[in-house]
Image (cartoon, rainbow, N blue to C red; front, side):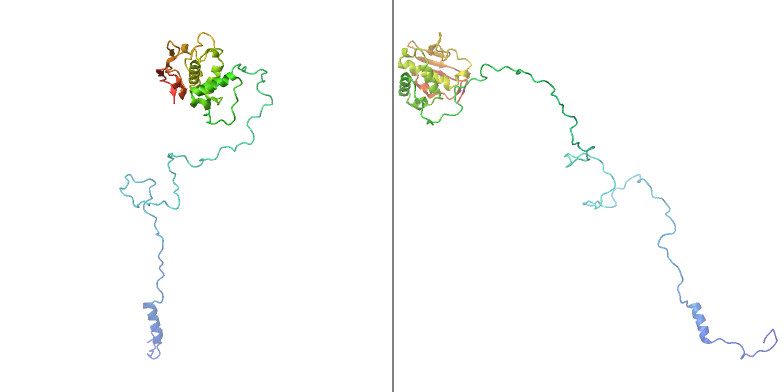
Length: 286
């Protein structure tokens, strides 16, 4: 029935919907084809409730959160370490020099000398040599001479050398070496102006004590009164320091203890047959 017109309308004239359309409408309502458009944000929308503190907490924790590694990290930390000096110096300088070295000297050389040279020497030359020649040679003499010995210019020297070689055969070679104590002593005996007045025993005795003097560096003795004097009151060897003789003029004792003697005792000393005492302690003998 159409209320507007009052006409009865049959059911056959009412509009109808097809089943397919009804079904599609139902599916669209109850079974939507698309999921709801809801997106989840990756970052939280709200900020943290508290701001991190700038300073550490009042009480430190007893154990660290992370165990320290035995090996250092690859990148150095930005925190500066305290400057503790090491026991050993660093390999190189810590900082470059403040200024490069200059190629030129700081001051220019003066054109004129600072002082005028003196015309005279500062010290006058000494008239005497500074050191006395030592009687002992610096090198041990060789057993055989490199050159033939120079013969004695006088027959008296040859006669004395033969006499000494006869009494002391072991000294024969030493007498041929001009730098030996035995040769020095023989030359001293030859220089004695009273040589012709001495018998053979006197000549031998004077040669032995002179060999002792030259062999033990007599020039360096502390006391050498009378030794090797050829004039004056102390010409006779019995009046020399440390020597005592018997009534016949033969040496009985020699005492030169603590007198600065140096070197080897000449074996010619054994030819003093009357000597019963030889005191050489407190010296520098070998």
